Length: 208
Ligand SMILES: NC(=O)c1ccc[n+]([C@@H]2O[C@H](COP(=O)([O-])OP(=O)(O)OC[C@H]3O[C@@H](n4cnc5c(N)ncnc54)[C@H](OP(=O)(O)O)[C@@H]3O)[C@@H](O)[C@H]2O)c1
Image 1 (cartoon, rainbow, N blue to C red):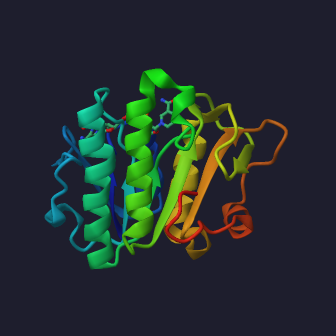
Image 2 (image 1 turned 60 degrees about the vertical axis):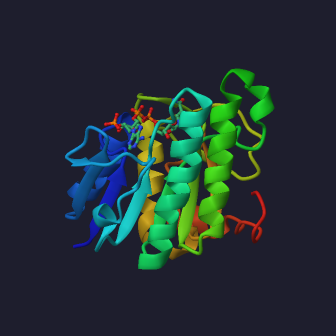
Image 3 (image 1 turned 90 degrees about the vertical axis):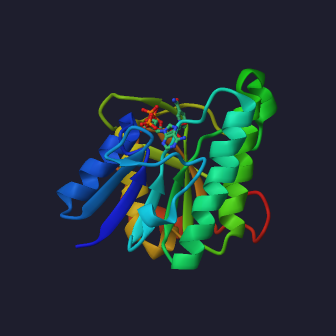
C-alpha cells in the first residue's frame, strides 16, 4: 500500500483519481482549498506532501491572470521543488493548447501560466509526467488517442484522464513525458504501459 496526495482531489477529475487510488487499496490525501486537507496550491505546504509516494496536481486555474500565474506557474513550481527535494514523483494534469495559447485569446493568460508551470516541473529535477487532456466531458470512457506535440483538437472523458494519471504514477516508462489525450471510439481502451513506452521523452530543458 502506498500513499498519494491528490491536489484538486475534490474536483470532477480529481475525485475519479482519488477513487481509482482508494479502490487500489492506497491511502490518499485529498488536498484542495476546501478539501479534507486544506491546501492552496498558490502556497504549497511541504507538510501536506511529507511521506507521499506520489503527487497528482489536478487543479482548475483561477480565471484572472495574476491568480493563474500564482497557482499554475508559481504554485506548480513550488510543489515541484518540494517533490524534487523529497524524491516524490509528480503527475501534472494540464491541458491542450499550452503551446498555442494565442488560438484561445479569452484564456491565453491562464494557458501561458500553465505552460510556465509545466516547464517548471520539467526543470525541477522531480520525476514527472504531464497529462494534457483535450476538452473534458463526463460520459463513459471510450478508446483513447494519445498524441504529443500539442497539435490536436477534441474531447476526452474525465474517466480516461483519471486512468492515465493513475497509471502514470505507477509506471516508470511515463516518466519525463508529456502527452495529449483524446477520445477515440475506434480504438481499444488504453493499455497504458504500452502507450507510455511508445511516447518520446521530453526534450531536455525545452518546451515539449
Ligand atoms: N474543462 C475542460 O474542458 C478542461 C480541458 C483540459 C484540461 N482541463 C483541466 O483538467 C483538470 C481537471 O478539470 P476538472 O474540470 O475535472 O476540475 P474541477 O472539477 O473544476 O476541479 C478543480 C479542482 O481544483 C481545486 N482547486 C482550485 N483552485 C485550487 C487551488 N488554488 N489550490 C488547490 N486546489 C484548487 C478545486 O478544489 P477547491 O475549490 O476546494 O480548491 C477542485 O478540486 C484541471 O486542471 C482543468 O483545468 C480542463
